[in-house]
Length: 280
Image (cartoon, rainbow, N blue to C red; front, side):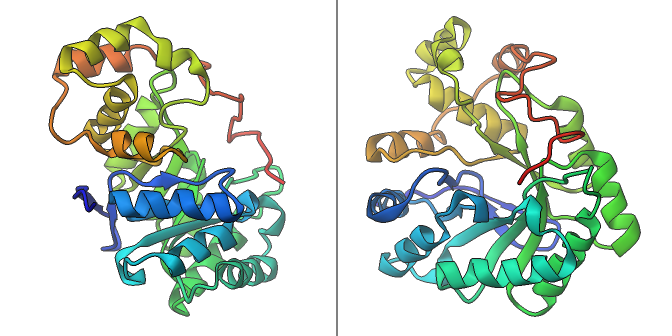
């Protein structure tokens, strides 16, 4: 099945589907089958990370898939412990070796780790890796505006994308506005939130009933209409199909505002504040 998913063009010209597959905890042969199922459903964006310890699983799914490599967009991320320039370069190469890929379409710095204060070094490694053809587009995860401003000031290169925690309980309105003003694409991790709370929300359920859709579909449509790329994780073929079946309806302004209004000042799932959080 090939369901057409709309695409977004990043500031460096790379295009990405507006929905991808998150792969956290998808490992081994079961993980390969889950990713293959998603590709068969029409997914073309696959999100991984060095710290997920599944780049090999993703690469194996790419090799087994009947879809040509150039039609897939594969993402991975640099962990916090390897942010010095030399370690970052070696880790990017190791990421490719693990996946047995010639290049990543998108490679991100996973967290800024501000106490370490070497994320600019890591960024310089990503810039060079792109020049060498190892990466097509470079971006960041969980970076605050001041972190991104420093990257651009010190290197002259702006990230194409910032992957941030974003869901109805934490709508990130100021950060999203800043991204839009600075031509940086927003990508949402944990777009449906990991807690069951949002999937049992009566307010969203009423909107879902009105459109004859599931709560997950309503939330993913909300992300799409915000202009954000969502990367929900699912190993279930039925849920995978459900998650990309959101392009035959739309939410009106009131519905969008109602969902956005569920946000909380401290709505992060695990209280991982990029201003202080340090990834290993």
